[in-house]
Length: 131
Image (tube, rainbow, N blue to C red; front, side, top):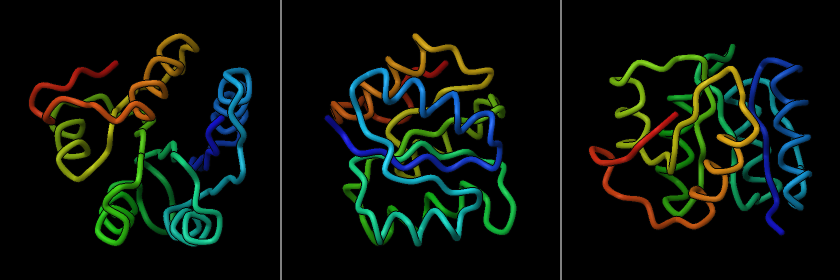
């Protein structure tokens, strides 16, 4: 069982992700609505993985990703975003995200993305697949 932190400014997205994560047998140990809050909760809770939205207030997900990976290079972060542009996906992966899944959230795709993120045997960013 892994411990998850969900970071998304959308309550609906957080609820959907929480249901999927707990349905997989994992535990949601915290939720955040912006990048600053995500960093604080990451440091306080030490989750096994984070689902991180890109578009959030105060501090966006990309800056949050960079700050967490800079300080905790072994962090397992899964980007969950409505932005599906290949340039954004590649930038996220190059900045340390383990995987990238796009909204709308489809349970099977999220499950597979979480499994890949936790397995941590990802190919280099330029060869990574995403949904």
